[in-house]
View 1: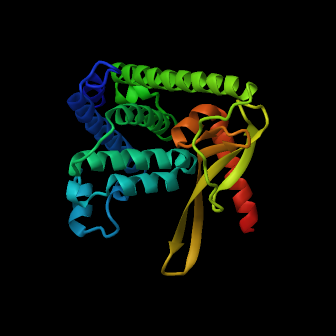
View 2: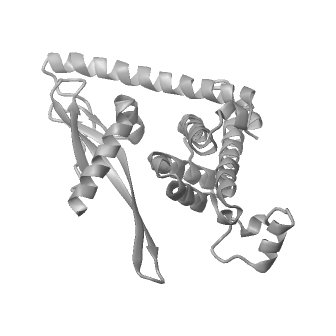
View 3: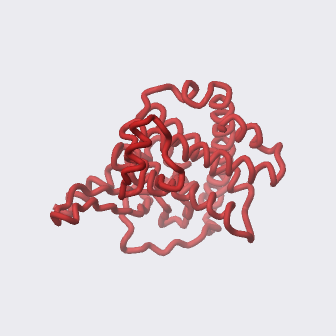
Amino acid sequence: MFAKAVSLLAPGQCDDFSVISGSILLIVALEKLAKSVIQLRNPLMILYEKVSFEELLAQENGEGFDNRNTISFELALNRIIKLYPALSAFQRDIKAVIEDRNLLMHNYGYLEIARLERNVQVRVADFAEALCNDCLREPPGQVIGQDAWMLLQKNRDAYRNAESLELEQRIAHLQRLHTQGQPLPCQKIDINPEHKQLCMICPVCTQAASVLFDIDWDVDVDHREGVILGVYAEATAVALTCGCGFTLSTHEEVKCLLGNKEEEMCELVICNLMDERE
């Protein structure tokens, strides 16, 4: 399925119908990969909460489960995060991919094809790579097919390079305006008091800028005992603002600017938040 999907998604060379069809196939392929990771841990984990005798009997006889009784992609994602907490860094991006899938499958209306084409391929490639490396302990090419993985990897790099180049060119333009004392044509960002903040060097004025982080919580509770089994937190850099007027207002742009530092900064935000709770 990965191979069929990426064959429809050559960057800049496919029409809108191919983008939509390829994106749906790619997300479905990722869903199947995610569920296979859970099933390898324990086959019953891909079922909803109540397990029937018939389902247990089917499992004992080596039969597959009825798809109607297996969990959704959303629930599969939540369970993978609990099984492999290190993958929580991907949670927000994959939730967005699932929302794109639901929009494609069930709704009509405006759809930004260029954004869909870029985000789905980049996010699916990142999460598929993590599932293979961190959960299955196998190279992605061995799990999803070498040709399909090489093409998916190539497409991801192409989009990332284009996004990085676009951001570099915009920053260079803003640097010239700043040295000339001109106001920067950036969107003003209102800081939500619920956002956590870390500082980084502004690429425009080289002074301290604030990176804003959104936090998602997931508390695992044993309702029979009233005991908290675990608290899972996810931090996502959602915006950047600086006194010089430079701002970034989307997660994708901030992620592109932070590069390899993003994961480290998100982990620091979560650590600081846990310390506050204690």
